[in-house]
Image (cartoon, rainbow, N blue to C red; front, side, top):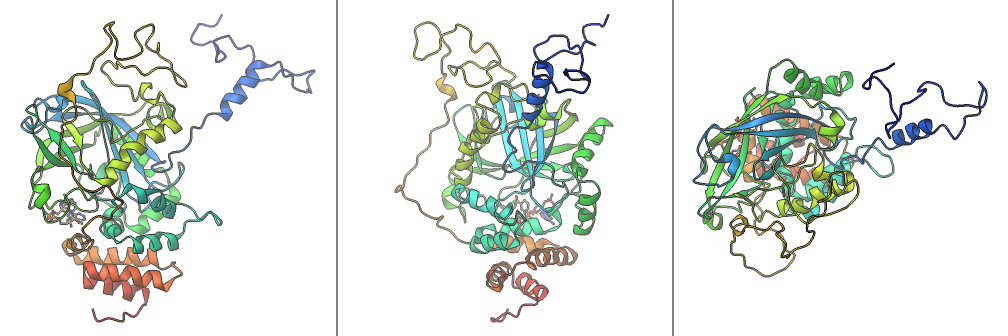
Length: 485
Ligand code: NDP
């Protein structure tokens, strides 16, 4: 007699009689179609993969908590930020961006830094990166940009021509390209990097007053990076290096943590600041808007099952809670649509009901049905609104804060084109050794580009950021510059 737990069952719960030998006509076969356990086993196996994320496919995740360490109730009514000492459970997914699900962790690439706070007012997702800026500032360019980071349609190889063609024709990328090519372009581990919300968001307090904010997660492990050589070696020897490091650190009780800060800008400053503060290719100088402490994030529990928790985790910058709104940032506005749309395709219409994504408070609405609806689907409760039978109701105090907009509806570029000052500021804050490595990384990346025109166009951008930066890249590529720099 086998006990219940030991009994192998089919997916419909019936005891399996033989899981090693398929049913055949005689000992040599052929195999019989009536072996329904075999059919089910093979068919389910064929369906084990959900579509890979088109970006951020390779990742690792962990559970933890956020603790408020400073009172920010002057600025936001978000309930999970309401009291010093308050803890909110969360789940984090770190990732690379361009590579496929099996690609190496230690590549030069931004890292995704996505946090899902399970707050009492619903989930709040902060879907950031380990860099404070991004390559582009209008979502309409995103599919094209990502195409350049992926494989050539004919050769199926990575394509440096496309990468640098696009960047050189999209000079707003220069700041992020400089960060990417600097030492911080390859973090030593997921634990040794900062995280940023990158976009500008709005915090709104109980009085309905708003401020613009930017999030900074500063690693308490210290920033550590890998040199290009060491990273390349690790990529060959252990492509899952960062995944393994995060899991092992948590497993042995060495819990990684981040101090969380915000920069706070009064709403009216947005009109007069020296550049558009919603432009995600730029940082707000910390001299203008210093970091203000909010809390601390600790990761202290590994997932029990990678697919259920990490692969099925679905984040969206549109997953907001009262007290936190969006800004007009055109990149953010596009992401508000794209993320959950990706998850509806990848995981299904009811992805938010899966255990890893489900809000910890009660979810009460009139959405019904859809593929894989696995709860009671609202049972017999009222399924439309308005209704006179006591269905769940909105609460106007939880509306997004109103604000004035104006302008002519048109497809227009940003009205500001200084892509150079902040990239140059970064170059100038680096030590001489850091600059040398930055230039070498740029040169190594640009060398395979076949077109001299692309290289020269890009060098002009480096020159505008800092003449020394451009000159060194040109020298490294063995290209003579026409103008005196
Ligand atoms: P600050 O001197 O006030 O801040 C410099 C920032 O750069 C700090 O956040 C610092 O924090 C970070 N930093 C230091 N060394 C490096 C490095 N080697 N690579 C990347 N970042 C580094 O100046 P500003 O705020 O005026 O910014 C100047 C430049 O610093 C910007 O153009 C931007 O490129 C870069 N930067 C700015 C950030 C911001 O939010 N203002 C954030 C990150 C970078 P830490 O050492 O803890 O990372």
